[in-house]
Amino acid sequence: MLDVLAEEPALFFLVVVLVLSLLALWAGYAYAARIHHQNTDRDENAFGLGQTAIFGLIVLILAFSFSFAADRFEARRELVVQEADAVGAAYAHMDFLPSARRALEQKLMHDYAALRVGALSETTYAWDDGPFTKRARAIHGRLWEMATADVRSDPYNVAYLSLAEEIDKMGDITEFQTAAINNHVPPPILGIVILCTFVGAGLLGLTFGRVKSPNRALSVIFCVIFAATVFTIVDLDHPKGGLLKIDVAPMQNVLDDMR
Image (tube, rainbow, N blue to C red; front, side, top):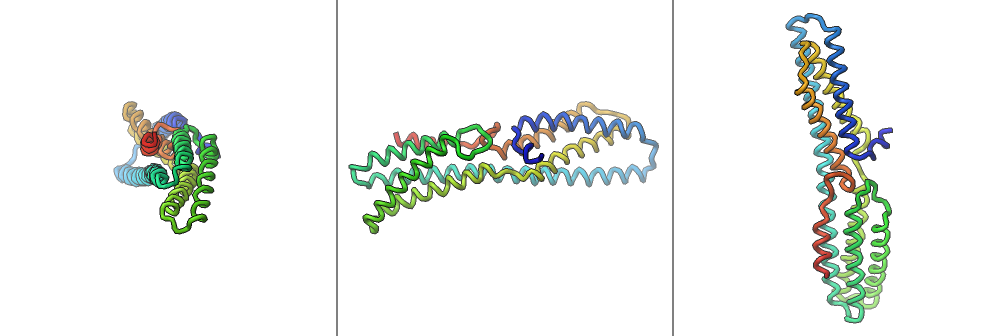
């Protein structure tokens, strides 16, 4: 079940977590207001210490999850920069090819870069073998065949060796990107984050219920902040289908320079 939920859009989590956290807060308030009786100062101090410890643990878990998702997002963005560098370098090395083949291979490299921009700009959550990716792989395979044929024909030609190295690097980075895009925060961790949100909301409701003094504004603010945190974690972890997308400007700039 958690695997299925992990593929839902980030806005789904925002709405669901907000609504359910408000319900958890109301349930905590109703429970405490109904059964609460006068407690001693010692009881109140014990409740306050327990409340502080639980909230501290919740904040720690949320901070860890947020940092985890942010680091992965930054790693995916760095891969785009590395791929753009490799494509640009390969295109530049093609200037040293014989004039009879230079135009053909540079045209193939231009088409490859355009397809990679399209693949990186796709808004689907999963990124397995979309149309852009399949066509880019076919062009990369053709470029690799040409590069290896050149190296076999003249293994001491530095230009051929450098071009083959950059084309090989392009393929490696593409595979790393595919793995990074499809590798998300483990569903159990996401489930723990959502559980922490509900526990925090319920605990706040218990606090208000013990004093029979609901604070609607504070309750809504609390739930909105927690729901927004979960939303951001999920959105960062799905950079092709959420509001926070991978910046394809480095690859687009390389493509523009080829024209």
